[in-house]
Image: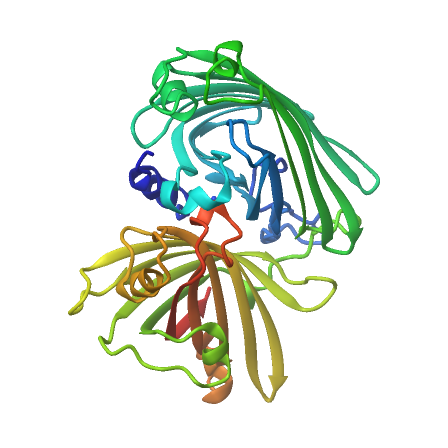
Length: 452
């Protein structure tokens, strides 16, 4: 099966730029209140973006191959965001090379599933974020896309997709139809399994994405789709089903559509930069959270820089600050590993407790990709006989204190000193996107975070 490291690296580069989004093209809105008696120009007021979200759910898909298993399940995290520079839409995203109100040209990445029995997914790890270029047209609720893509071994394919976005009451529906052209090399590898050559072909897909507003920021997410493989694929000895059905059910947190988000961004919760240094531990999350963490005998360490974009200052009407955050992590060389890089994309939530000094509890959920597997992660997976995955689920747990309060010094009111756990894992073998592994890595870190 193909190597995917180059394209996953491209995905991380894409997602760290500053990875189901259709809304405003601007991250912020400005408003100039009418002047009264004087002629001074009122200052522009920044507003939170109206397009953001984080969710998770279970995808079920039919297996088209001639196997004893008929279907496969995956747990998939989703992130949504859009501004003038890039967009994230669940399992796809793009960096805008050029755009106006109706047209855009993007560097584009999209996740490609290869639905095979889960017992083979750890060794093959053929699911991947592929890379290419996309043209998109948007007008009112109509959206049309054309993209040309390639997998990690330059097997080409492309698609054209039309979808319509409709909203009424608590429902948001997005019906779509798509044609996918696949090259001879693509079909020979993924459907002929290098045993038969069906030639190039054209598949057709259709379905609907749905979102239902439950309460406040909580939404129910659903999807149902069907793909018809071309006749030349269906007649291969490796293929059993011409029609492949897939569905998704989950939940997510998004702006409350009954309470438009038009609150000005307060200065103290603006963008942030976080610098951290961490030390690896072979202990799991439970041991760390209960104070029983052990040190890494090889003293592996990392240094990270995170940037945060404010999304909202409330969740479920509670004073919870939300940020889209991207991070660049450098894992230092040691006796057992070389220098290597890591990219992170996540949504981070902070809850502030005022006890005279302000304290914050933070939690983040997202994706992490490493240029090579770290020793602390690889050694654990070797013991469990897993093939490591460079792409894993990312969690961050943090606790910090405001330095302005500690030193009673107003110029430091935007500075926070804290502790965090940097966590990568495969979500207990539930996701083919993360290599169907159970395990990962943890780093205890200290950080300084500055809001501006």
